[in-house]
Image 1 (tube, rainbow over the protein chains, first blue to last red):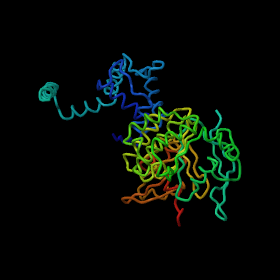
Image 2 (image 1 turned 60 degrees about the horizontal axis):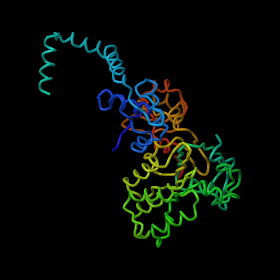
Image 3 (image 1 turned 120 degrees about the horizontal axis):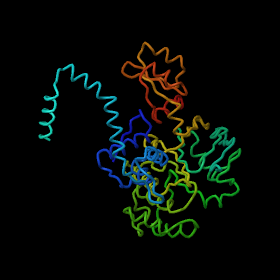
Image 4 (image 1 turned 180 degrees about the vertical axis):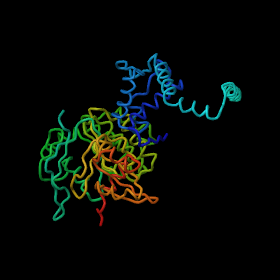
Length: 123
Length: 285
C-alpha cells in the first residue's frame, strides 16, 4: 500500500483528514477502535510522533477518545459533530457560489430536484 | 532527559584527510535521526566513533559513557547493523541465534524466533545459502530481539529491493521502536525514509551542515516557483539554490518569511532530497 502525501499540509493533518473522511463515510463507526499508533507508523512508514500528533488532533476535536491502556476509539457523537461542521462549511463556503451559479443559469428548483431524483434512481 | 549521544568538538583524521571536523551533536532519546551525506562525508567514521570502533579527538558521550573506555558496557545497550553484512558465511541460522543468546544478556530468543518465523529463513540454513535480502532479515531479527537503547544502522537497506526495504522499516516501526529507544540511521535512499525521521543531520566534508528536527525543516525551508520577471527579486533574497524548469526558476530558501515568498510565486515544501541537492552542491567538483 502506497500513500502519497501532498506538500501543502503537514502529514499529521492529512492523517487526521483521512480518519475524518472514514468517519463521515461510515467506514469507522462510533465505538470502533483506531489502529494503534505503532501499526499506522509501520503501515504508512511514518514516525510515531507524527501519528500521535494526528490522533491528538482528533482527541482535541472530541471525535475520538483515549481509553486507558486500550487505545483510541471513535466517540458516539463523532459523526454528528462532523456532519454539523461539514454542513456549516458547505452552507458558508460552497453554497453561496453554487447558488449564484444556479441563478445565473435560470435553473428552477423543480428541474433541479427532478434531475437529482433521476440520477438517484440510476445509481 | 539526558542525551543519548552527545559530541563536542568531535574530530578524526586519517593522515592528512580530515574525516570529522569539530562535530557537535546532541541526540535525545525517542528520536529517529537520519545522518545523511555524500559518499566520503564522514558518516561511517562518525558511527564508528560512537560505537567505540575508532579513535577520535574531542568529547563524546554515548548513553553517558565514553565509547573509548567503556565499550563493553556500551555494547549491552547499543546495537549496530553495518552496511557490509558481516555474518560468517559458514554459520547456520540456528547457531547465530544460539551465539547471540549466549553472549548478549539482553537478547530474547523467543522474540528472535518469532521474527524469523515470519521470513523464509530456516534455522538449519547456512548464511551462504541466504540471499542478500534474507541476510539483512536475519541480521535485523537478531538485533531487534535485543532490548537496546540505541540502534545504529549504517546503510541497512543497501542493495535490497523495494519490498525488502519497506519490510525492513515496517518491522522497525511496528515491532521495535518505542519512545525509550533511539535510532540513528544513514542512508542514500533518503526519500524513502524522510517521513520516518524525527531529526535530520546533513554532513558534508566532515562537518555537520544541517541539524534540525523535521518540524523545523518544514518551517525553515521553502521552494518557490518564480516567473522570469520576478527572478531577480527572488535572487536578492539569497536563495540556497536555483534551478530552471519549463521557463520558470525554482528557488530554495532558508528562513525567509513565507508570506514574503508567496508574493514571488507558488510555494512548495521541498523534499529532503531537494534540500540535500541544494546543500551538497559542489561536493564532487
